[in-house]
Image (cartoon, rainbow, N blue to C red; front, side, top):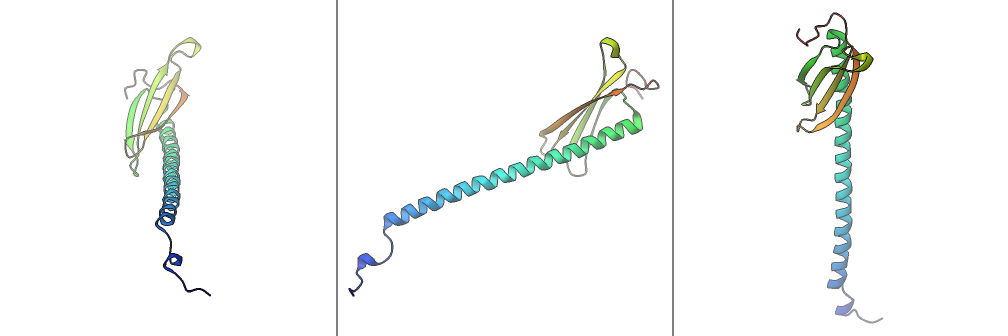
Length: 132
């Protein structure tokens, strides 16, 4: 058995640099993956809230006031805001008998999440100019 020499002890500088390079590359990839997952989760949450909020706004709109022409805005308790616009559809056989309702939902940062559009029949007892 030969006694250990200085050369047999530890790692060389080159080996350490290569190990750090591999480790830093792996950490950068992991960081990128986590960031992508967080962004995807945030977008999914925004879409879910937007779907729920638009549904609530449209149900309230139809149940309480019918398809009245005009615009409304509001805020939810969790910081999201919405804007609903209603306009009579003109042209052809449906002229003045349909209302186009759109609901745009914005996240707490003010970025548009989604816009939903649907059509309702104009009720005969509604004012035609949008005034209550």
